[in-house]
Image (cartoon, rainbow, N blue to C red; front, side):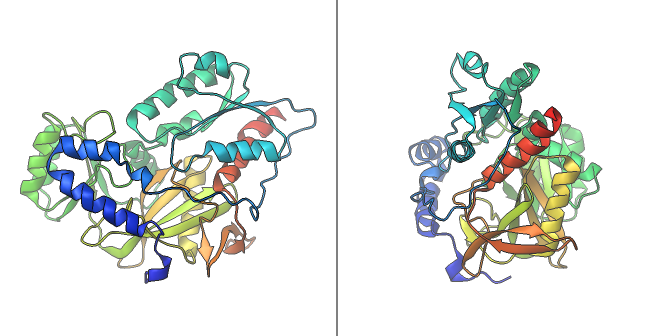
Amino acid sequence: MKRGKNYFSPFKGRLRSHYVFKKIFKTRFFLNTLYRFCFPKRLVFKPPARNTEDLIPVPFRPPSGDETYYGICPDTDSFPWYTTFIDFCKENNLRYKVFNIHRSDWLEEARPCDIVLWRPSNAQHSIKEALMKIKILNDMGKKTFPPLYDLMLYENKSMQYALLCENNLPVIPTFISHDYDESRLFIQSRDRWPLISKIKTGSASIGVRLLKNEKEALRFLKKAFSRGIRYFWHGDRQKGYVFFQDYMDNMGYDLRIITAGEALFGYYRYPRKHDFRASGSGLWTFTELPQDALKLAQKVKKTLGLTDCSVDFLRDKNGILHIIEVSLFTLISSPAQAIVNDHPGFYKQNNDGTFIFREGRLWPQQLMLKSFLERDVLRQSS
């Protein structure tokens, strides 16, 4: 798979400057934190002007006389999801209100709503807040998007790995342990280097390290099981556990497939120069997607019982796909999340099992919401 210059992300120039300044401040944790606070990476991905002229609407027809009331909670991403939910409700004449779920009166605001739509951020404190509040809303008899089960897997790499292994899905070999002695023996008995270290909760390559040899890994282990390892914006330190993943020789890219109802989207991601991490690099290629990756992403969604998800893959030197991780929420910067020959669109499955590309610009979030409503709401109410 060749990466053409014309396919790169339009944010490449801004990202280069961002990483240069980040490297300058990297020597001190305080200065690095201050820089990332004053100039967060989300400012690099400034959203383009919204063009709704050629958007394909996502129709949803509730039963006659339906009085469902939707509560929409704003999220703070550079590319917010809640605005697409508002458009979905407006286009389909659904009753809704927008309220701030972070306020002290969130429960009173949510009480009149039948369904609450909320896209939490990937920060650990945000996920903890969402797990607590969505559990309470479910106990009150309210439906939530995301469902509680889906949210439990969100940025929870340990749980994802356990479920992927249990269902015999091709995940990259991983060692996860909360025991120091077992982890030390694992490192000392290992003859294959380097090794990838990750944190359980993190995106855009935050908390991802390359451990080149046994000495470096043992030093990392000692720190993880003593004072812990700090990572910006993710609350708790990495303390009392290790998450090691095999370093895999690959084709030089990773592949993200996004499922959204019956449609699929996706693109290739490339690492920056002298780096092995493609996530968060901002270097994307939009071109035709392989059939085996589309099929496997769909299988992951159905096997794990998720409403929808994005699946990140590596393809090894033998051409075999391996799952890196699964997530519910991803950065969706435009309604063109799959592009073939400069035409945006999406993939749908034929009766013979193959996937074909169809042209058109539409928001994956709206397809996800429609799928959730049809599967978890309308079916149960009928």
